[in-house]
Image 1 (spheres, rainbow, N blue to C red):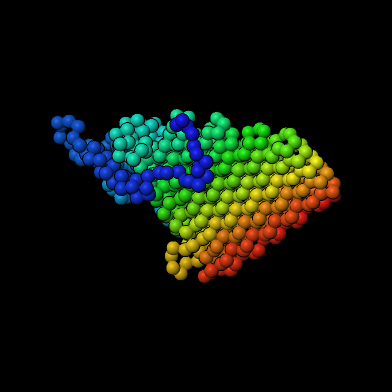
Image 2: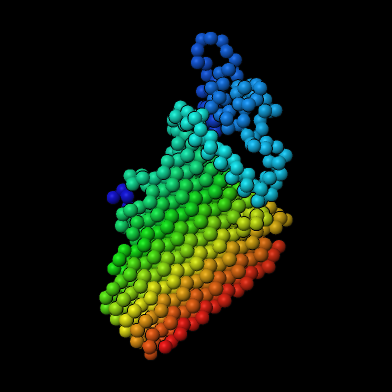
Length: 457
């Protein structure tokens, strides 16, 4: 069945073209576009600048050439004095100053991205999309063209489409409304742009992974939420992994949250487990934070004698970062889900999910301070057992702090044990997560605090 996705979705990212391949494909596309623009369109003599004017007219609103005295011509394009960014306050010095540090880099990218998206929605951008992009789509390695956004996924084609080779966001993955059918993955961006978000999974199915950010600049897409477990004790789907940024600048996408386990009713039944949170995407090598890990889903509740509450899902690990001093640091590990409550004589509460590990940080420039490792996620609490002779669920293990070239991340706190019923056994508290070690320029994080044991009646 073409819509089916295996349970391996949790362990995979979206599968875009190899990073270098789309970059290589952009070179012939650029060459072809230039050749097409310079090709003669009639027998009347004309200059190369005149032949290039029709493309200049389309792109001039984006580059701020329309207001220049020279007009939107090819000659103006080749004049460096008119190549200023179209900005309400077009100060080249301000733009360069903004890009000089990590926080300014993020702000500059957001502005550039918004400007490009506004142009794509403009009449000139729509004309470019209809006339030019189809000509170069065959060179775009499955993308929509050269400057365009990828299409969102559908039931027939669940994965989002890739963005344009030069600029454009990947499309969002399809969100499943079918039980047991996983969502689509987000599409990857081209050179500049953001990856698409993964779709949400159907009942009991995994969410889609976020798409990769632009090869030069862009953020990874967020992972989609896992589907809740079906009634009658169905297990939940896992959250999708966040998309990675690429080599230079950009933040990793957040991992998707796991779904909640399905409830179970009846003696001797076990409720469904919560889904695991997705892993956060990795940040860029020069700047950009790792994505946060997804939150684990809660275990389902069980009602009846000798029942067992569902286990909470584990939080996703935070994304790594290769950055050199970016304040964003490694991603926060996701919180573990709480174990499900069990009601009835001789029942057992569900175990709390483990917190996700914080993302590490490593430098790419020798002698530059690295970023801090992310903190481990707090573990889920064990489920309560309500009824004579029941056993409270064990608290989950706190997530380990991330390794940092700056300061190591703090370990996550352990989950509290579940309370027991009359004449019952309380659940044990979970251990705290280990502190992340700091290395060259920092110190280790703090050890997580163990969870409190439950209370026996």
